[in-house]
Length: 176
Ligand SMILES: [Cu+2]
Image (tube, helix red, strand yellow):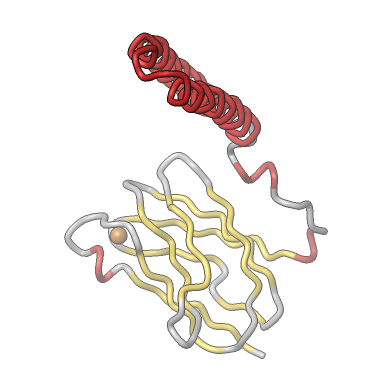
């Protein structure tokens, strides 16, 4: 539902922008006439290139925006291959169920928030960020990650969410 609204608003705004560009481009052709045939040709080529870019960009937006939300485009894996994992963010803690995994297991994090936007960020045992997705109230964002090494992974919040944002942290244990 909200996706349809976003989609319509985007199309209307892109259309309005296109009209403004057309208007400017049309007005510019009057001034070009004073600069002789060489510049005239260059400007004409530029108008055509701009038109081409416009068509390509509108096409690309039409193709990709229509596929939101991206969960619908995730490849279908057999149910046994992924471990559904609930991630609920709230000021200022994470609730992750389950929070222990085995090496080679793929977690399908289903990430949402009880209050404001948070940033779910997963760090490996060397504290390198390996996965990240927004935690948003009213949405469930899906993120898959296959654990490649054992140890203690950290989950931190990457979206400023209030005074204790920096303390919003938990752990995920991965065993052999
Ligand atoms: Cu935060």
